Length: 185
Image (tube, one colour):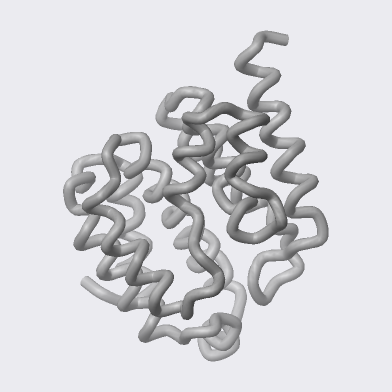
């Protein structure tokens, strides 16, 4: 196995072990599906191994006991830096965390950081769309700590801030799914 393949393999295993027992909000879908989808989106556009590893690991610090220092030690400084851009402070309220993410867009320094954010949100929107097709709408929105209107606000504001990416296929798919989910034109 090449060094790149080994690093990606270690990131898959580490993420799967870290998220073991976790499920997607309101479902019985193993949580690891989300980081895997983020990584696949990034791989689809031929991003390098560090960005793809960050896609696999982007929620481990936020949702488990893993620290940024552990990510740095195991996967390098670049991966840890990417992961830290996607890590929310769970001690803050939902509104504070989401507002921070929105305001952070302007502070992201590289295209890789922007695309990691986009891939994360695209994976969420894909999941929302798929679940909405299977569930009654009120039941679907009740699984979120904040309902449809707050989710709509969040994704709407993110799309506005991410307009710098408007010509990228990931952004275009995000925008299309947003319109379908929230019935916007």
